Length: 473
Ligand SMILES: [Zn+2]
Picture 1 (tube, rainbow, N blue to C red):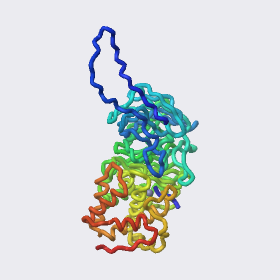
Picture 2: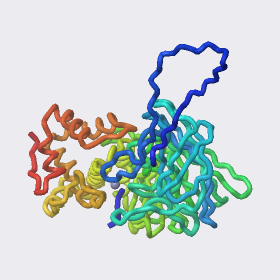
Picture 3: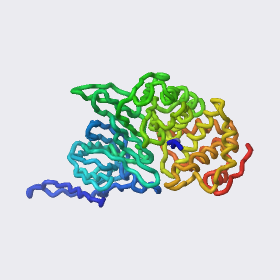
Picture 4: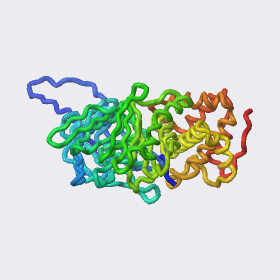
């Protein structure tokens, strides 16, 4: 992101055998029965205990939805393929403000109940650990944003000509049932039906578009696992340009309210060029599609690295701005392909995206990374730390600027050869996965030939005084 300025339901699985009086009574050794219990209603994140759920691991979401801009109503079906990570009697999905009409698990009707932002599903029979199961949820309603006092609103927002769903750290649960935490990445497919003449843009590779009775269905497939907050949809009047870049689809959508050749369009037109530059620094571009979407809405005062197709608030484009494009595209490696395991490690996303802006600036001949570092190093308030920033500091200056400085200081500490090797080996080792700060420290030490960097990271990520500058040793 870049800112502009249940009660456990124990299911008794009685094997109801039918025995006639004349049958011999079988002699059986007792078999240990699996202990079925409900999955937890949070995935275990210290910062956001209610986010996500436990007991299963989603492999894919397949959404078939219809949205009517005139009424603001959304409805349809979510098909969720998952694997049980425990013997499950019941499990939760996150869903905020929408009404569920039916749930099946493996085609059998399931009981369900909704309370606050949790949908609890009780399948007809318990699900054995390691079993894959398919949940189909039919739902409808008028989607609404959710949020909190410190981080603002995320999720669905209605607009004059449509709507959009966007936000960090949460957004997805306002428009589909989801295990809403980046630790559970999954593939994402969307078929969104909207009135003819209205566009519906989302993540990944565009599929065929069909039209019937005045409604058009737009289809999108993200086949690389995605953290739920990196899903999005933007519905409205857009100029949608489809092209290919290095053999992959490039889809750029600019609202009709903005000029076709204005700063927003000119900035996003550089998407391929910026992505190619970043690939020279970070290794091959990690996804199957490229692109970008601009939202011309004053509620969106940020840009977000939605997977394969970042979304940018128009506030960034009073003039041409490829820097913000570099930031959001850098997240495709740092944040999207290598996703957070827990929110407290957000500097792993923002520190590297900030540093990518510095590298881009140097590439453009504006200012070198060293010059930008020097300026910030002199004036920064070191009482604020990027490691474990707290929920209120999740998108604070320390995470971005001190995060970026930490990356540059690491470069100085281990030398350019080890550092630029690490910039490529880290995304390669954790591609399509999740990682923590501890994982990164280990990778950095390995890249540095086994050097102990614990004191370095303690100073830069957690220390409350100005960290000393190390010279390449
Ligand atoms: Zn960012």
